[in-house]
Image 1 (spheres, helix red, strand yellow):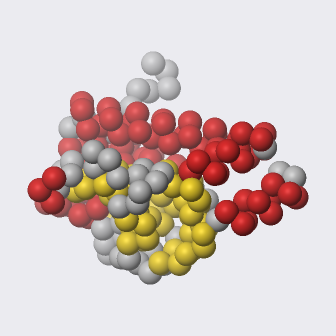
Image 2: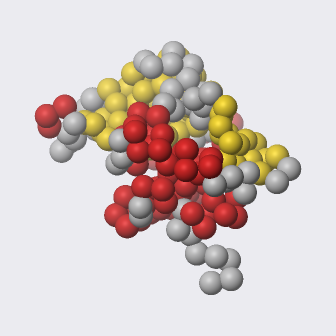
Length: 214
């Protein structure tokens, strides 16, 4: 980016901090784009009758599109202590159109988010409970996992309820499927948040993924 564009981006940003469990943005009247500088968040959609759906999880370095209130309202909530920068979407995208470097960054992140949305749509529409949980763990490994010899270590900032609300399952089902994956030797767990993926290839097969040879 040019120096002038960088200064313009700084000027249009609204800086915020949030503690774990706190709502960062709620029920806004305009589309917003939020950069997660530190921490982790969940985007929650609200429907009539108090119904909620965890739409997506976002982590350090992610851009989050928070829609304005429409058919549903949305809340961005902190899963961990967070530092965030919020932009009015129209202003942010207007600047991106004139800055190829920024536009490329936005497009790459949009394509990655679209791919995750497709995977989630397939999981919710066609996969079993165990496939959904395995798919979730494989996805998290690619986003926040720490590679270890023969596997991957996850420190999940979301609760079992968050996972259940995201995957369209109950908390009991989440716990049962994690137990089955653990008994199969595919994962190891420690406490409520640490998951060690012992066999990524087998876990991907449990997730219903096609083999690389297919």
